[in-house]
Length: 118
Image (tube, rainbow, N blue to C red; front, side, top):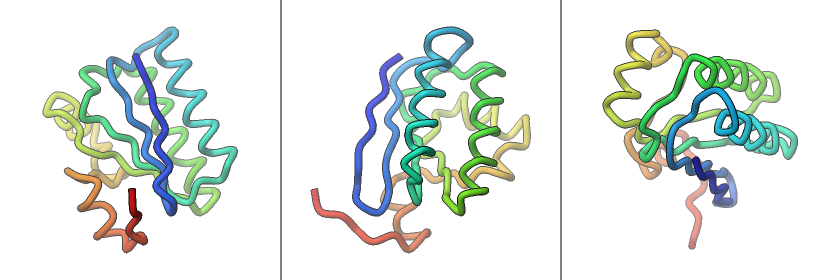
């Protein structure tokens, strides 16, 4: 699994490629979330467009960090989950607690975030 953090000014994007499962990939995922939490990011968008699998450990960490971000008054957003991940979020009803957007542009518009220039 590879992770890249992209600063967009008023928000950050955590771009993930690969699977999030118990072991090293989950540890890398958690370290990245903790890093964003520690810097008190106002809004973190997690790009799931290239995540092909997430296990129960990864889901558990995601839910735990959603609560931690909320406690800081920050937002944790899921972007572009593949069908398999969307189905999992629906089955577990996590789609009712996570804001999910099909594109970064849609999220920026819906959340009224300042647009950035790249």
